[in-house]
Image (cartoon, rainbow, N blue to C red; front, side, top):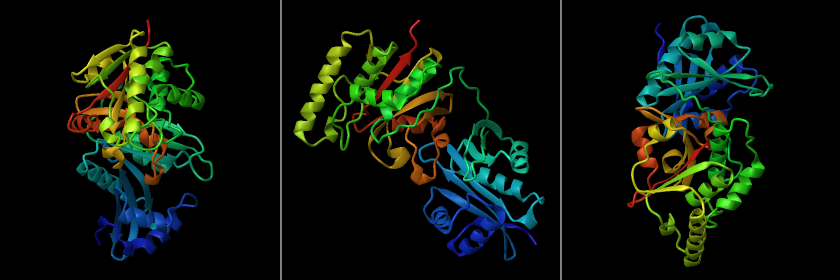
Amino acid sequence: MNTVFRLATLADLQTLLELEQQCFTTDRLNSRSFQWMITRANGQLLVAQRGQQLLGYAVVLFHRGTSLARLYSIAIAPDARGSGLGKQLLERIEACALEHDCAYLRLEVRIDNPAAIALYERNGYRRFALIHDYYQDHADALRLEKRILQHRDSRNIKVPYYSQTTDFTCGPACLLMAMGALQGERLLERREELQIWREATTVFMTSGHGGCSPQGLALAAWRRGFRVQLQLSKAGPLFLDGVRDEHKKDVMRLVHEEFTTQLQETDVERVIGGPLDLARLLHGGGQPLVLISSYRLTRSKAPHWVIVTDCDDEFVYLHDPDVDHSQHRQPMDCQHLPVSRGEFEKMCTFGRGKLRAAVILYARS
């Protein structure tokens, strides 16, 4: 009897729970998690069935706005192990990821599960991180990755990752990462994250706490001893059109004018207009912070800072400081995110005026 591979439905829920009990002693998916995977997740839950028996399943999640997929979980029934079913599920998950324009597939596996590690490595996955105390029983996990399109070289500069600790400090978090990339011994600390926000905030944004302006972040980086280039599509304050309250607009204008006055007393290079040539900036030792619209990542239209870690002919790679736990993400899911060139061009411009902003840090010689 042939094995059939298909998408799971809610009718499979009880069988999936029974399979989960057979395969795992900790970190089990519960009924609510399976329902979310089947009905609402940005991903797919694939099952393998022979006759009436469910032999295994695999869950792949997609990272909206990027070319990254994550193998969230895979399970094989005890009496189906050793039959090649794991390899078959893996191949179908990779095909599914390719159909969704993904370039990379990532996963975690227990360090004490040599059979699973061997399966992944036989199929082209490489180890790139060790995560301590990852599972409920405090076991460590290996992080593996496979480029399912083609391999690429990486930069010599390694960008550390720092997750923002508030909803409004994406800019400071990115600045910490950029400074850490250029000064490898530098500590990335929350105290400095909040201090940078105090220095660089525009006070008001579209709602909530103020975000950090490009001018404010450039000044904060310059004060900390870095050479800075500021690239803007226009010289004036950004996003005034998104603020209705005239008092808030006046405050934003005044803060912007003060930042501009302070910048005139520095050697920060200001470039108005023109394209953002990431390959040239990275090759020249620059570490770019780019303001994007988070809509293509989270469906929120708020401006959001990310840091570019690398680029090639096809992709721009980002560290996103915002870890969205509601999408079952971990900090590792937000590092070196591959975003197609076309998608990146869309996310880093705003509105009809195609507003664009970037702050590029360099180490002083």
